[in-house]
Image (cartoon, rainbow, N blue to C red; front, side, top):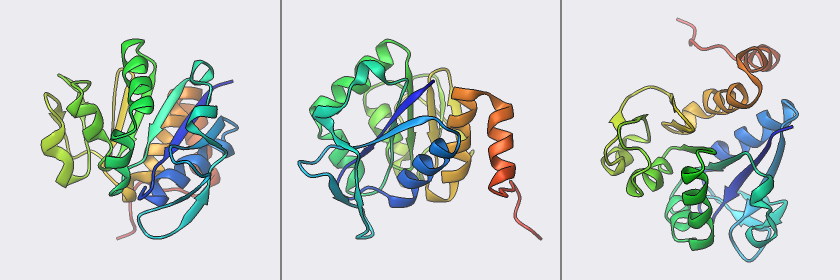
Amino acid sequence: MSKVGVFLAAGFEEIEALTVVDLLRRAEIETDVISIEEELLVTGSHRISVKADMRLWEADFDQMDMLVLPGGMPGTKNLEACEPLMKQVELFHQQKKYISAICAAPRILGERGMLQDRRACSFPDAESYLSGAIVTKQEVEVSEHITTARGMGCSIPFALAIVSRLQGEAAAQTLAQKIVFRQKLPS
């Protein structure tokens, strides 16, 4: 069974984080919500507080198959300022273990040179930070062990891409049908 860590910093984008947690748990993927703050209760960028399952120092990174970095401001900057988390992101990248980032958070990967020659996407205002990436306007990009997404409106496709990565395309399609997700908006 796969295990995923979703990291919350003060000012995180609530929908980006919670959509991933919700859909991964529906897919029966073990998902830990991890606070990088001193407290379990973390307040997002729209003043919605979420109680994490554990604090960063309680997390067992050796048991994780994927790290998920939600965007939001100042959440993205706060994630990036968390040196213990960034050490794990670097280690996961070196080991080619899965890393997923949405909205502004792909800039963290871009600034660390992890997107070099990879297709990647982010929130439009963060695209200039995707150093060396082949920047696209796709909702989600999967390039080797890294998944990126553009923003809050792409949260469901992002979460489904993670499910597909960990359980296969059929599992992601089944989940999409269960939640009545459709790719195209009605005319």
